[in-house]
Image 1 (cartoon, one colour):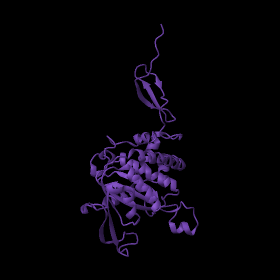
Image 2 (cartoon, rainbow, N blue to C red):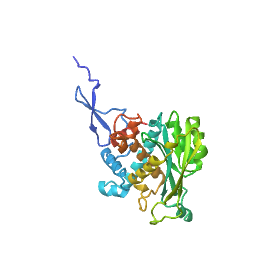
Image 3 (spheres, rainbow, N blue to C red):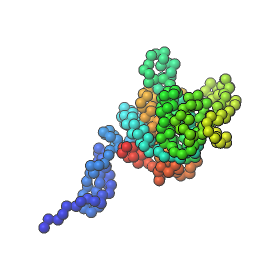
Image 4 (tube, rainbow, N blue to C red):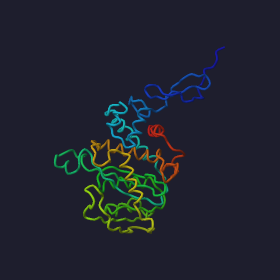
Length: 318
């Protein structure tokens, strides 16, 4: 009598092969199998997944590409390819995962950086249109600290429309939005968020000169709260959380650190690293003001603190 073959219904994880594919072991017969429906987190890249997680962790703690190369021995071209692939996956993942958030108070701000060279040099030397000033637009939920939307581009109406369009898709219900004094927001916020939104701007006046040193921020000499649309709670007109988020970006992403040569050399790699940071910040980084939880947990989008390995697995399935 021939015994029936084991159906391998009770599979448990059993490590990975040298190509990064998940291996499985049957708890009944002990045979090792490979599931065909498994998706490789790094696509066709042959870098070891553990090394990829290690490199991403370094990059997200403020290290430069070349510093990662010196420590890990992985060539910088491979690291750049890793950033580009994971960043593209993180962008798709964020658009699908950050949905249906009931954010009562939202703060908007933009952070400046440059790609390859600053705008004045790019124009003088006739560099490609991707070179020069780059602006990263960020929207944060003041309660959960979740990054609701982001966009990378110019400080113009087109990028603003993309940014606010994503914000509208990510949130539901009534909300109060506060931005800085950028004029583009004045008509764009009510246009994209509609009647469910109350909108105000916090306009800061700066001194004309920087009194201490050349690199010190200008002194704030006045603040004006300007309600623009809807019924606004004056006590919640603030951009403090969004400005603190800007500091986190500059501290965690080396490309944003001022007065270094670690700036981005490619616009697509710059945008990819921003996407990686936003996904990591939302799902894998414990926020100090939230205790032992992440913004995604506070917003009800996750049940636990994700590891970078879990984040890579989630982004590979979008």
